[in-house]
Image (cartoon, rainbow, N blue to C red):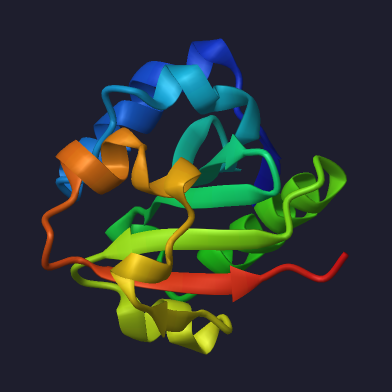
Length: 144
């Protein structure tokens, strides 16, 4: 398995993987510099990324192909994405999820009240358009 920063040539394959899980993919290009992919040969099998808003990051677009699950791919992508975020001065990650709260709790995230989310995160498309109001909001404090 190989991990690397996503490049513009990866965009179509990243969007296909995200779309296969009904995850928002239309705006990934804007934040591609903060995406990491996992490749098995020349096939992308995992992806994860974040949007940066000053000291806050919105974690998003985490997906691993079914055939590659349970190999620690998402955890490694999270580790690499977190390191990039720390390098950029991000102190906290937020995320919205309707299906993966258990997984993210195992990574150290905790549920956060929507009202306590910083306005920079509340102003994102993820928060306002892409994710339903019923999505759980979670927070993770990055070590800096």
